[in-house]
Image (cartoon, rainbow, N blue to C red):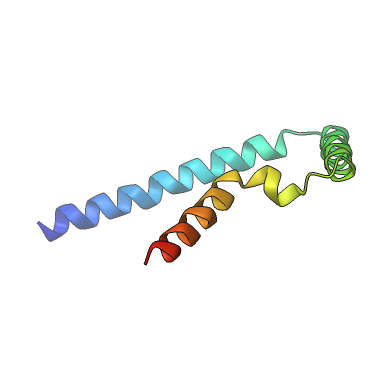
Length: 78
């Protein structure tokens, strides 16, 4: 049984290595101009969001905000 678990663990390590190598190849496929363009787009979007009055943290993490609200409600019930 231990041999089977060891083999399964080794297979998991190999599979995660393969996935990491694949994602590295995808990242390296971008040209420097494409990366620069994407960064400019992200910066423009961030500045537009910031000037609109919506904080970036609230835009990215609506679940964290909801989770905090639920936790505070639970504390009040106790």
